Image (cartoon, rainbow, N blue to C red; front, top):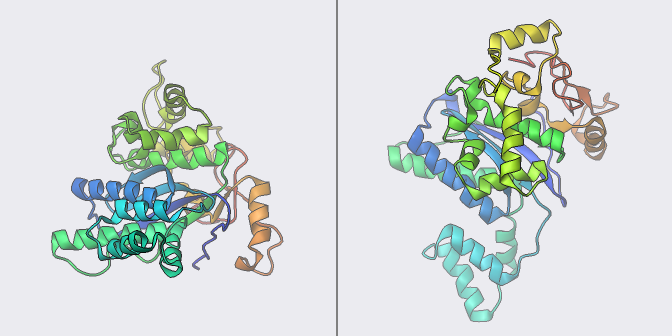
Length: 324
């Protein structure tokens, strides 16, 4: 059953979003991933959305974003932001610029229309997917939709524990897929782009570590990723392969967060809400109508992951294939 999407209105919120190519087709090669990467950064700037990290795979992509509280842009700032993203030649831009230059302000209906495209995770994903589809179809001569149904999203508590867990999960996608042994070697993920020097990518990772110095944050995040990425640590201790991790998890062996995140943890993509027990229960109370009438609380334990993910809980109780 399709679960209703929960979006927080009026205040900052973090979302883990996943969009898949229709039919699971592996249509995203390096050129396509590069175009999609640029669109993500460009439209994030337009929307005022912060990309914490992302990962582009051949048949789907993940993006972890923070949508801030609504900002009251001046008309001048609104015109400049629209122009930077759509270009001066766009008829839409010419209309808003023409009104501003002639009257010194943007008409209310135009302003509301443009502001409505900003600060909303659904509009962010919709615009990125639509603009990429238009580009891809023009390049390949195909037509029709490129993406399967609607995108998935999980509301993530904006805490160090929750956000860093999901960020690691996103950055470790190419490791789980067996493409690379170390996330830093995969060009199309936020961590690799941060290591390569992209200031925006570094800002995203630094944000949830609550630090201002990249060198320190990089070392800390690297330390967390090192086992999960499949790279041996300095002691030369061998890391566990995924089959061994899955087996030890079933046996009740205590494993690290990085080791567990080498597996597919559905709570992070299908859990609806992820965070501490208090946070999930608060969201449940606020959006009570989205849940069945027999539910008395929102927070559900993350079955099958043991203590590896700390005290995180989810709004969905995934009884089947929670770990893969």
